[in-house]
Image (cartoon, rainbow, N blue to C red):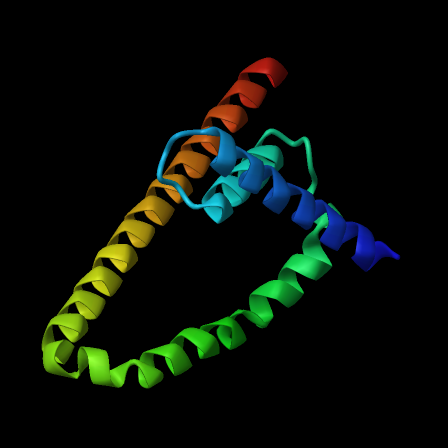
Length: 130
């Protein structure tokens, strides 16, 4: 039953993302809205990681399987893209490195922010105890 509840929580955030996608006039995919809402709920401590840990771990583990249909679609569209494959390859590599760089930079900023926050809390606690 625990897994059903965890999956239901994740699906609710996904559904909320779908609703936002339909209501808001921005060209943002529904999945991005949903994951942003889930992130906000976790950050604001409205939802604990323990409430979705097992199902989210299972979904992350199975994520590579989700890339099989697009790969098959790409192979079946070879006739349409074979004349432009160098451009597709260049765009793929460039976008991959841009995403990796942005993700790495963002991760470093978050780690630094958390470290600074922890140091500030420790210094506050040290002053309170003195």
